[in-house]
Length: 427
Image (cartoon, rainbow, N blue to C red):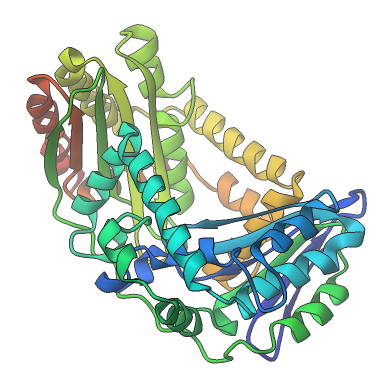
């Protein structure tokens, strides 16, 4: 098997998948810290730290960091999510040591120069402004607040102008030393890589990281549901709905993912066919399920004419309720085929493969084999999918946000309560 795993003295894990037919490699550092790990006075610091990592180290200026990678034709990037922060590169085979050197340098030796910090705060304030101007971003921020009230998971990853202003160099250094620790970090690489070379490089370059585990975030508590209507002068009404899903390691996960795909996972999904193809009520509608370590988030989004918002939500509720009891074997097979294709296509991209390996290590403590993943998909049946769907509707009250103008938003939000009226059938 081409996948190899090694645990370093620092507690950091190295996982690689060697793909001999490739001439390029993707590698990165994933750490199990994100927005949910932030205290109220740290709101937005995970994302700010991700930005500041590229703004200079003891050995390199911010310009030198990107120039060294781009001089060999590579690229460098990073991303912050609710539970993870990732720093990654894509390079030619010969430049893997350089990429690992740069990635370790930005995390082990950042300078966090005050002038750079203030400049980056301004950049993120612009990012916050851009997000506020994007309705389908804003509507999910409101939805998260309802789903995870008074919790870090319910707050925007970007922070606010007020919280950003309070962050100092010392704040970033403290957050870095508290949460970026060996046992919570994974170096993942895929493509034209040599496992032992990565292990040797990572052992020396990450030796300074604390070998004790970082503090865990508080358990997530999904809210009591409810609705919020936000009036804005917009051309469309943006409607979102959420229910409590299941965690990453829940046995029900794959069955719920199949149900989600059938409901709103593509052009053949029930919602797309009913709402767009038959009724012409929208351009875009989709459903998704995002699993976390101890909770899950089932979400649905659509945009429609404000006058059509009440009808739209009525149709959505009817389709969801009806789908639970009328799933067909053909739909199950189609959804499973889509999931397997997505899984296997991911194996053809070294970037996607490296990310998949890192996420497996953080979620399961080991990389799941392709055979194991395909087996879990294959094990999904119509009965298990129906059970997962019933449990989804019974687990929580729906959270709903309607954003836009017009009188129909309140009626649309109220219509979502129809999802709970059918619960009695499922007990």
